[in-house]
Length: 346
Image (cartoon, helix red, strand yellow):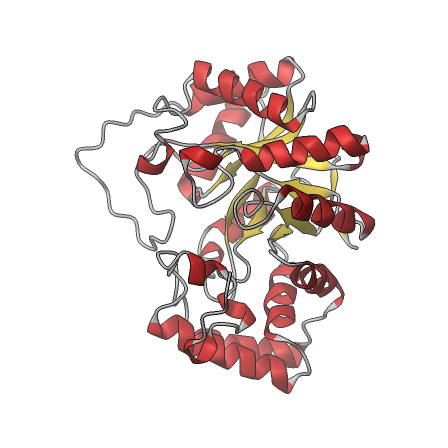
């Protein structure tokens, strides 16, 4: 395994991060525990979850993923071997079963306390805002369109103050962003500079893959210059980049098969690009999964690549991608396809 440093902290995290959002819906408790055992044995010390998980979100399974992780900690007593990240859900139609009060001080305190209880731990290493409260371009939106009727008022300082209370209480150690824009990331950094006693956002968890390289447009520079690295999620685009859906295939129990509305990476341009990346991988003796994950692993602005799997074979291949190199020739091939299909799926 290879390791990086989380932001400006001294926390060492594995370049491969274990994603967990299928546990409790597509994966059972036993399967989740098997994944955790294997990942830790392979040196994967960075795990990411959220109160929202499993996904798709629903009241019946709310926070079951955190409960699965908590039972593993209670059973194995290895909490100190894991850098654990979780998130507070933002306001949305699909989170009304969680809360409707966004990132208010009370909401943050209640969310942290509830996650700690479910995770059966005294602290969370990285606590993230799952998505902004304001209306902006996230979850499949490439361009920003301003909402003139938006009621949101900037409350970034209040959020940092609330998170600081949780840091001072020892409940969380570091904080980060998710589904955030360059503007939002820089606003939080500016506030930390103005109020250095408040915690600093150390990471941004956004989608990034061969099918969605929008992070490179503005946030990649922020990540490098400000030491606020990317925690890349959906590096296989809901599994699309594995090539398993090519030719119109719908594998049983696969994510897009089970949840057809998860079609962000299934449009015509994405399919064409996926086929070309698959052909490129095969020409270089790689699987499409190896090519896709290795590309993310080797980007200089990426702190960690959040992989997700529903089977052990998938998990093993995903973790082993850390040993795959992107040669100059292979990179040229990737760039040629990227020029033809710049961002087929935001």
